[in-house]
Length: 95
Picture 1 (cartoon, rainbow, N blue to C red):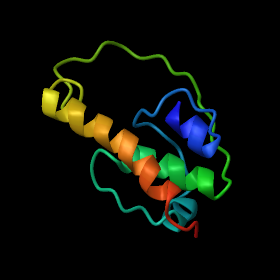
Picture 2 (spheres, rainbow, N blue to C red; picture 1 turned 30 degrees about the vertical axis):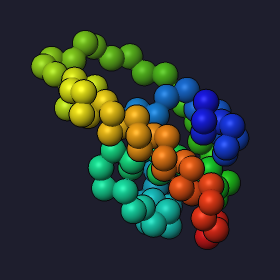
Picture 3 (cartoon, one colour; picture 1 turned 90 degrees about the vertical axis):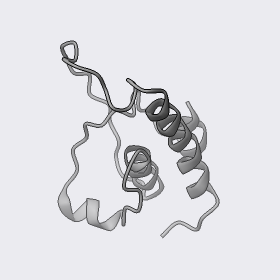
Picture 4 (tube, rainbow, N blue to C red; picture 1 turned 60 degrees about the horizontal axis):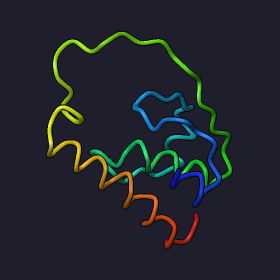
């Protein structure tokens, strides 16, 4: 919802799966190296006017425990980055 309000994106999930051409990815000049990477990619693509599209996928239940949502620390860090990264780029000049 925050990404839709701030950047006009119409995506339904910020999961880790995405497809992008290598030359376009390099143009995004990614900075985040951990939990903020997925949301940074979406924000920067939206700011450049690139087409963003959610594609529903089928999946099975995870075997084992997630490093992100399976721990309090991972959940808090991911949530923090998902909130702070969009705000960071809201106040920086678009390239």
